[in-house]
Image 1 (cartoon, one colour):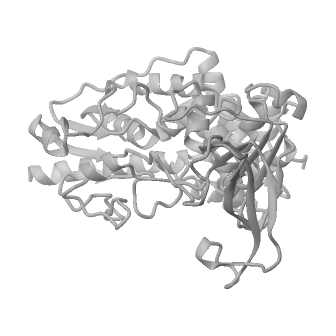
Image 2: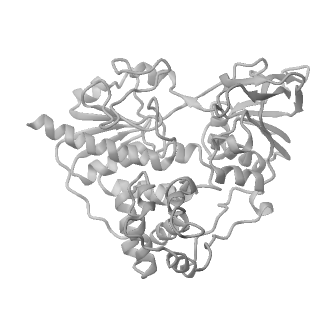
Image 3: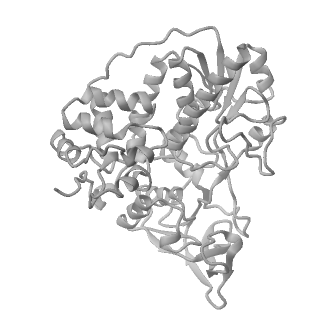
Length: 457
């Protein structure tokens, strides 16, 4: 059997000069060849690896026999953001990892085949989708990211009147604010939001939960259930000396800026950039810095290369593009230039006190291993948490000490009846990916439907 078909990529030189999408869509011939490698397993393991519940074997089979619209239908019915997920889903750790468990030497390139179908749908202008007449039962969705939008779509197609309240002037959440176009072009997200709009979902932008709109207000306005999917907006700080210097920024601000949005602090990327963090966001930040003028970008992280929380594909991308890595290391303070600008990072190498536990509390400084990295820009990419406004509006809902919501794992209902929550705002999300957010949205929609039907009995 032939080997795995790989999509064409831009060269490194082509990539770092702009934000054009790195990977190309399969041609029809490439898609047919790759789909023909599928074993059509009777109990397909790949299906079990998709959090959104896509019937992967079905859409691959439809490509194989040239039923492209049938394949599109399988994807669109299961995942409201199947086009976005085709680009940013960590398939190598999910569906393709389970496909690897078969007799195939290399797993089917599921992400590329999914992208082929959703791009075909978009290029052909799509097909009209029938709108389910909405009943007078209203459900509010707080947050217009992938979890909230997926929930709203499921509710609307089940006949509910769903309204999404989004704090920002645009929809999409992290898909539009934190994922640059070289990974996920904005027109892909906009197309899929338009498909959700066609189902009858209503959107209210610039409408955060605040003193003027609380959960109580939503129930008073006739909404019978609320799904909270507000995401995380407050970047974590390191709390180190010099973190307030000019030239030290958050990943949130850099990614918002490269996506054409207004950051809380304008980011001026210099020639020598240090990125703090070992997750996928840190990898994306490092690659973005190269595209906006950095001549040298170095990632500093606690973990060794095989310990990083970043997905393998994101680490590989950073390596390919020339990002340098200083691993098993951590910053101690940021140095200034004698004025108010950052001029370097002073740090130390570390080792783990307890093997296999990759958290800051387990890191032990290695004596005599100090180092100094000269730089003119530092970007901190160590994660985000609930912002103060969100925490304030969660009063009355059970949270942990850091403000993350606690829910029933089966129903996603919070401590308040009729209020559900999902996505990054949860205390312990399964993962912080677009596909998992979609899965939370679908799960919440099912639970809301069951809850409303129970209250009628």
